[in-house]
Image 1 (cartoon, rainbow, N blue to C red):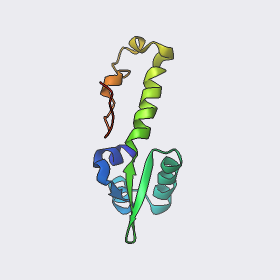
Image 2 (cartoon, one colour; image 1 turned 90 degrees about the horizontal axis):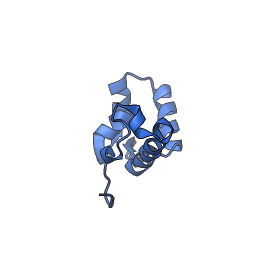
Image 3 (cartoon, rainbow, N blue to C red; image 1 turned 180 degrees about the horizontal axis):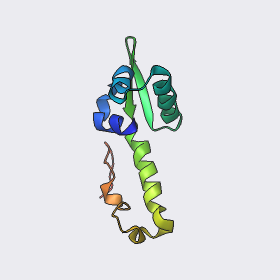
Length: 98
């Protein structure tokens, strides 16, 4: 679900399309979207009767940075899979990192 929202970009996706794409019933969809929202990883806006959900890229990057810094007990080179490379984080508007 989160991957789908990240791929959708800043425009986001209506809840119904997320449910259709993932084959989820409404109650399951609602539960997981609310959990992601409470975690600060997604937000939504109302357009008429639809709720449009979007990934919160700043929060995602913060989580990825934390996980990267603490990867393999602080020894990123020990992972050996390249997953702990902070240069692969998604850049957001206003991001001034090199």
